[in-house]
Image (cartoon, rainbow, N blue to C red; front, side):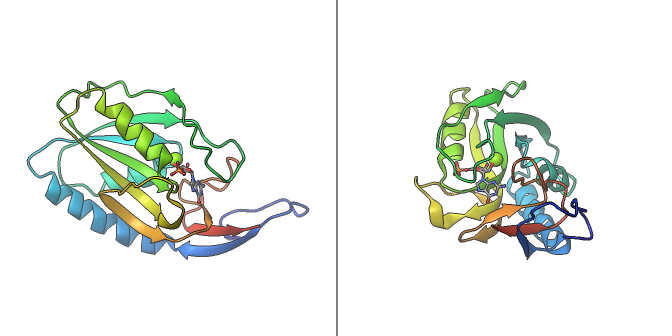
Length: 184
Ligand code: 5GP
Ligand code: MG
């Protein structure tokens, strides 16, 4: 972590435990992109990136796809500076594409309680797309409050608060090329 981010000497930094190296992420993204390309062979899905956390995963993933796609983004409210979801999800910005009769693939950073994705999927169905699938960088399955299963999962973890590769803690650490668990 220290190679990539210099902290002020007096800053109180938590401990960073590496969960996935940049190289391991790359291998997993390539593998996932192959599956997605095969599954959508005769379609032209609209990939919807969930801002801001999925932005790095999204941009790496789409560059590994071998099928034609369109892209769009949606922004959901974050937790603020807290570590836990309150399930009270608000939309900060909407997609601008026409969703009707399109196959949609949501690209998310991490699924934890499942409340955010459940709400987003229900919201997108109101625009009458042809299909909706969900692709997530991380599936943090142990804290599910609602049954939700992503169609594509890059990496599974049980617990822990993760940062890096787009994931933040209070808007910090998104630019780290690897994924770390923060120990406070
Ligand atoms: P859920 O509604 O599934 O509990 O929460 C999903 C959202 O919470 C994710 O999109 C992400 O923004 C945030 N989140 C959940 N777990 C983590 C985590 O370990 N690290 C970070 N940075 N964000 C998380
Ligand atoms: Mg998110």
